[in-house]
Length: 200
Image (cartoon, rainbow, N blue to C red; front, side, top):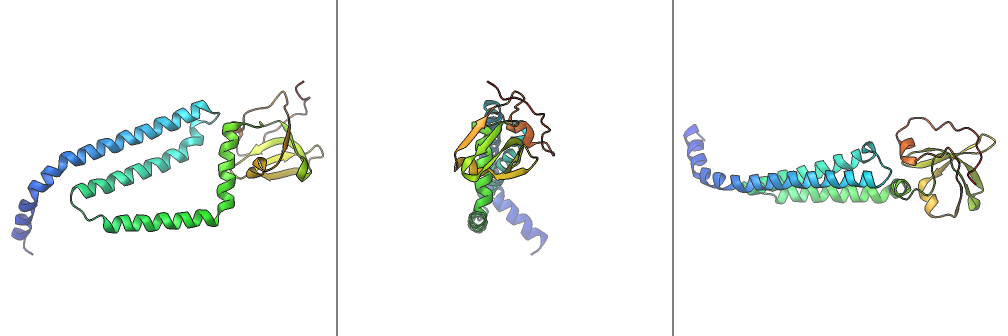
């Protein structure tokens, strides 16, 4: 194919491309509005709970990638690109992700339980909690996305899967120096707690 053929083909498709530009611009604007709306919603979620901006940062990144990806695909569709193969590839990827989630259900369950612990706040760092059915009792010294660490009076530490708190009866004793769970989630080391009397 010569340069002249390419130029003539471009001239033939130029009106269609120019007609598609306003629609593509509208799609891009809609994508930006969706991105801003999701960011605002996550910011409000952080303010309404004890979460910090750092806690919701992973959700923001995932939402941004999804919105930008869908917007890009829609823009390609506006300019006449065949999207059947792209949608098929995305469907395959999503199916593989879903299978992976089923395969790691325990990890997903504990991560979800962690988010619920941050929102519902059934206990705080420094509280003494007891799971009688598991014969465990200790003060909460650390939290990550999978485990809550309890420190017993004799120095023994227990790492309790976070989903266990929604399956067992938990006895809680609040201490004067208790602090929110969200603050500890970002710290690399367990909290150092002094022995203190429980609140009356």
